[in-house]
Amino acid sequence: MTVTQALAQLTLDSASRGGAVLTRRQKAAVIVRLLLAEGAPLPLASLPDEVQTALTEQIGAMRSVDRLTLGAVVTEFLDAVEGIGLSFPGGLEGALTMLDGHLSESAATRLRRLAGPGMAGDPWEKIAALPSEALLSVIEEESIEVGAVLLSKLPVPRAADLLGQLPGDRARRVAYAMSLTGNVDPDTVRRIGLALASQLDARPAKAFADGPVERVGAILNISPAATRDEVLQGLDQDDRHFAEEVRKTIFTFAHLPARVEPRDVPKILREVEQGLLVTALAAATTDELAAAASFILDNISQRMANGLKEEVAARGKVKEKDGEEAMTAVITAVRDLEAKGEIALIDPTEA
Image (cartoon, rainbow, N blue to C red):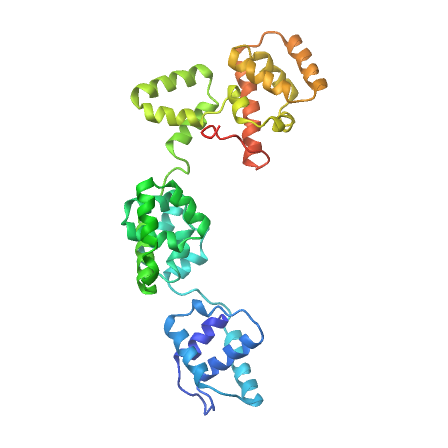
């Protein structure tokens, strides 16, 4: 049994026991006063509102307790806490919190729906932990007033980021509505949070972590150039907008000068096997690929660049398949370093 659980039991049962001088509620007040005096962490906010209210009223009504009584109360309280070998969170929402990360997403979603809008805890904490795209859809779909409340409950940097992603007119209307939220009572804000949390939990879980644009782009990134060009041409005919979005995610050897910082080139080359690097440079014969090869050679030491040029000359003509595989190895090294946070790519939309 936790300290807060023991306090809740003492507080809700106000009857005296065994001829004790203090009621159980008074004993709970004594324990709270003692723990606070000792500076111990006491998460009273996790208790039901009625328990918090009863404790506060009892503490306000009490004056002093002698040492003998204090010792007896502490001993009884410790016996109650230590007498329980294992405690459970209580309620479906508490169980979900305890098992977070151990249940499948589909099972957790179904259980959250069962928990319903009366779930325990602060719904805004759950909402704030959701990805930005989920929150953005709520702000765009719900009323202006609900969007204003949502932004008001988020940390300022997060709210600013979401506001910046809204269309101009809606952003202005939501910002103005935020100026009118000062008189909204806490119960209304909590009900809005519960409704949004329930609504977001009811949305079906995504089968894929990434969107279709990212998945198609990732596949085309490592596909042969001929296949990539053919697929993009077909996408242009079927859905030009989708094809344009996919093109933005594609990153090939030819994109190195536009996407990689010159200072990061030596770091990238250390991740690529020398033979593959020479093959990639030797295969860079078209204008775009030659520009990428020059970008690499121009941003390393002159001695290393001269050595690579000699090996490229000795390598001679490269088969198209071998060249594409070598160039893919270079791009894979770039992506790996980016994923580790060791380099940052240039955003093509901001270049």
